[in-house]
Length: 113
Image 1: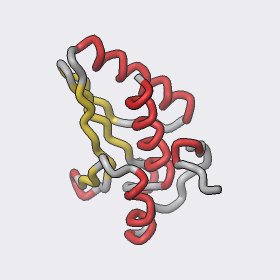
Image 2: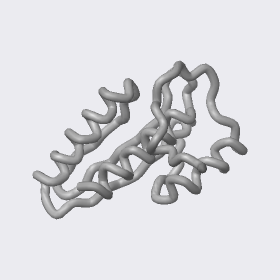
Image 3: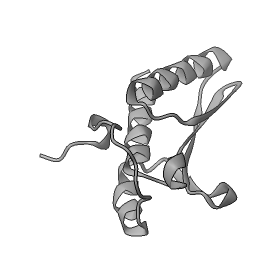
């Protein structure tokens, strides 16, 4: 039985960024996320939409709680009716498996709201 990325833990120190082949293998598990490269650093990016600011803020708080529980923290931008979430691993200046796990967990939070 194959486990979902959302069922894994982000624990463990990142020592190397994922290779392009590893990224390509993981990306289908989080199809709504884009890879962006601001300042040359690969990041997972997704915008979540909500009916109002209160719902967006509640989701931001839920992602923050997830981040604390996992020991892995995203960049978050909360606006009226939307939240931008960006996951990447500072220590490797790019993407690590933990980022894909955290993105999958973020998707699960959004689906369960």
